Image 1 (tube, one colour):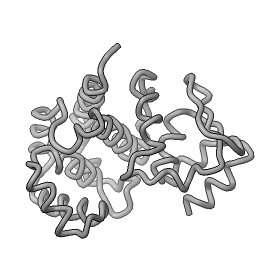
Image 2 (tube, one colour):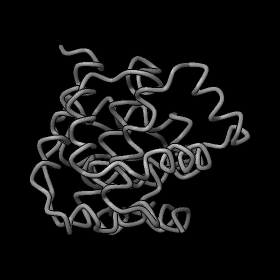
Image 3 (tube, rainbow, N blue to C red):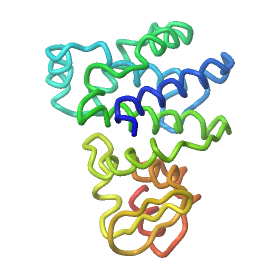
Image 4 (spheres, rainbow, N blue to C red):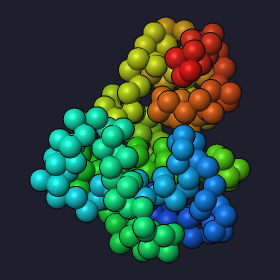
Amino acid sequence: MLSVKALARDERASLAEFLATLTPAEWDYPSLCEGWSVRDVVAHHLSYDELTVPAMLGRFARNLGRFDRANADGLAAMSGVGPEQLLELLDGHLTPSGLPTAFGSRIALLDCMVHQQDIRRPLGRPREIPAERLIPALNFARMAPPIGARGRIKGLRLVADDIDWAAGRGSEVTGTGEAILLAMAGRRDAASALSGPGVATLRERLG
């Protein structure tokens, strides 16, 4: 069985391979992250890799510990980095480093997987995520601080219909593991692919 760090590396390699196929117009296309283009999502994804611990602490201190503001700060620092440079950075950081290696590199795996789907869904470029990567990402997403899924999934039982995974208690929400993952991450777009008696509650929480 591969380690989570190895799974995260495989996920990053998959992202790099996909990004290499994009046209300039697709790099500028809106992602599922409100206000962010595809380029912005990739820049954000890489913005923590080269931070030293003091630099990371400084970023969060400047932004009062808020993930959204720290993310915006990191994106601003990458504002001048174009697609070719981003691909070079990604190729040089396939193995996670820095903050993404926290929680046994589960942050790296989850962040890359969610953001790859943030890019693929608007572009109409779906994929089948290997279950060996998707299952640990689903498990970690339930409790990962940046995702904030606890309130969204409280009182719900999530059941994937394409892989062997289920979690939680309460009204059932059923769908692909990928759609469940994105819904946990707050992506309203994914809710349309889910079904079950708990979907109305989940959609309300997604806004």
